[in-house]
Image 1 (cartoon, rainbow, N blue to C red):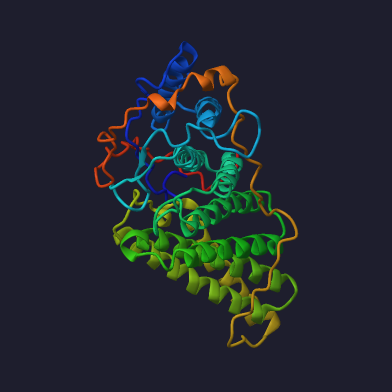
Image 2 (cartoon, rainbow, N blue to C red):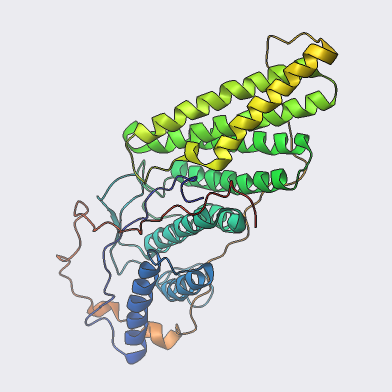
Amino acid sequence: MTHWFHRNPLKATAPVSFNYYGVVTGPSASKICNDLRSSRARLLELFTDLSCNPEMMKNAADSYFSLLQGFINSLDDSTQESKLRYIQNFKWTDTLQGQVPSAQQDAVFELISMGFNVALWYTKYASRLAGKEKRRLCASALFFNHIPKLITPAEKGRDLESRLIEAYVIQCQAEAQEVTIARAIELKHAPGLIAALAYETANFYQKADHTLSSLEPAFSAKWRKYLHLKMCFYTAYAYCYHGQTLLASDKCGEAIRSLQEAEKLYAKAEALCKEYGETKGPGPTVKPSGHLFFRKLGNLVKNTLEKCQRENGFIYFQKIPTEAPQLELKANYGLVEPVPFEFPPTSAQWTPETLAAFDLTKRPKDDSTKPKPEEEVKPVKEPDIKPQKDTGCYIS
């Protein structure tokens, strides 16, 4: 399923040494800094390691985040922030903005930027395994919805801006829902349920597309084409299975009109697949129209429509409505929900004595080493994923 789901590129970041000469006055503080440096480097390595699995990612992320919490929260569970929150400048690129990074001297910026990448990794991992990994998409959705506020608000079009966060949340939910639909089809559930699930999924994609509508087209056009084609595809699915429900209720004329609408929307989705492939923008270009799951819908619509037309000519003799039926479908079960997410608690390595070993009064006043915001960060070289065997999105 690697070539079924669109993925924006991972965020890139500048190296962080966590060297605070003069400020660190004891071995426990020195060890914290060494462990932060090594755990951050390890986590960054795993983002591009194809052998990494969710357990490895969670352990590495928890290790780094628990240490970083000492730079953010006080040790006495009060609402006060750590005295170290603003000691380090961090730089991160954005998934849609190329290689010009954002920079903030704020450990919270680092926490949510790295967490954002962890969530992106889960979506990429899930796309490789498709049906087995609905939970990973749900986990990603809740992380994107669990981002603490920054002192300096995110600029428009940056990853941490509300429109992009919402779009990522909705896309994760929609793609997790796709897995539910594939399973419902495989288990031969009632056409009415499949139609309702498909309709809800199409609405997710429409909502995500609308969320991005006010962004600059140069950054969002490719992503929006993907969301639009998925909306058309699943609306076609909804009309196809709704047509089967109507036929089972002896409403053959309405069934034919529903199938005709499915045929029209499927053709539109095919055209949008081509437009998506020709649109420039961040992320590798996937090929949904070449996937078995996509092609099977075309055959299903064609065969079901022909069946309805035959039966109407021999049995029902019903008039075909001019207008397509209004889809007012609501799935009563099978809808996905994000799974709970929490950042790990502060590492036990942080004690009052360790924190006291960071003496900010000895911090050098010369801040000339502060990175320049316009400086480029080396992009993440993501592995080239070869398409797996086309299974038609069946669940194993």
